[in-house]
Image 1 (cartoon, rainbow, N blue to C red):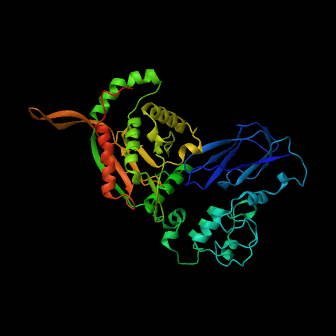
Image 2: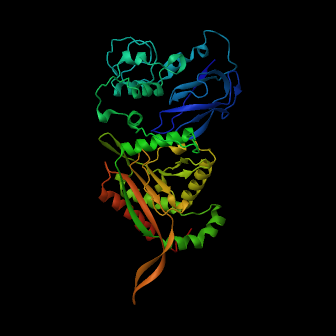
Image 3: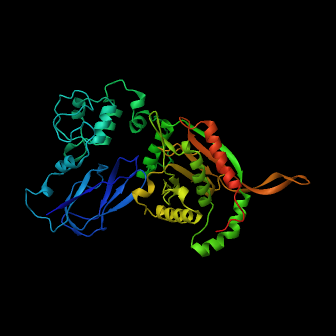
Length: 439
């Protein structure tokens, strides 16, 4: 009788773990392919994970509220029939044994208890517990010896040390004042240790409201981004009169022809995608002292959810889509984002982001970069303004539709000249919009 091991899915390059918030099944349940197995929560999205196979749930290895590394086995499904009671079968192993079998080893590591690899000091010391690749990596970066690692109290199954355990150990001074290189500090560790402690006085009539889980994660992500990248913001004002007149003229016809509501955002996305092809250094990421120029143009659009939190679904290959395709993708992603129906793949692998301050009648803003990207564009509200235009009979003051575009960028690889030229190019594309464009 064969078995299928269900693993925690990959949820983007910056997401290394997820929390199991709900199980839809229990051991012994018969399930079909695409039946919901469990619900997970990350800093970016909450997702329901379906079963990839038909079968019987033989083992559930993690309880609700467990934090699980990406790639670890979370459940075992018997795919050829009912689970049996043979004590020697693989599905009756203890959860810890299953984790050790499934965890993906790093170079030079071993997943079995015993001798530790060279990730940490004192490699001749015997270990008594399993350590995930993520915990091993943090231990190596923080110069934590095996002896120290063995002394950390774990909150996982069978006392397994999880990421939160080792970070708490570091934050509480467990590193014993060992010198560290700034370049080797992981962003999570740096955020944990360097978050400023502010003393807040609370009045008798003040209300104390606990942040929800997503808001806490967004806060950590924003602090990490501000600490990682030196932010610079450039601003231009664009005359988008032709675009406004064109949309007013074709929006009803567009709705009837394609059954899609036409907003300004697809046009902004189209302009950004075109400019990114001309300025590949902005479509990039930073890895230490290396620059990664992205082959694909995947544009993320910030969406405000009903609970007040933000999510950034991604339009993949945005430079290869026409205006109808961009409109359809945007409307679909935005609607499902507001209803928590996005899959992990739909919020991962973005190479550039756009946030629309104009939807809240704001004219300008300085957004924080969405790591590991190097730039983010903010679009302000479109307003009628008086402007001076040259005419055959001289200068004249006329009413034009104008908006501010602001670009925050990572000054480690995007200089002012590059950032300014890229932003100006987006404005030029919008200003040169063909008022007679066909839909």
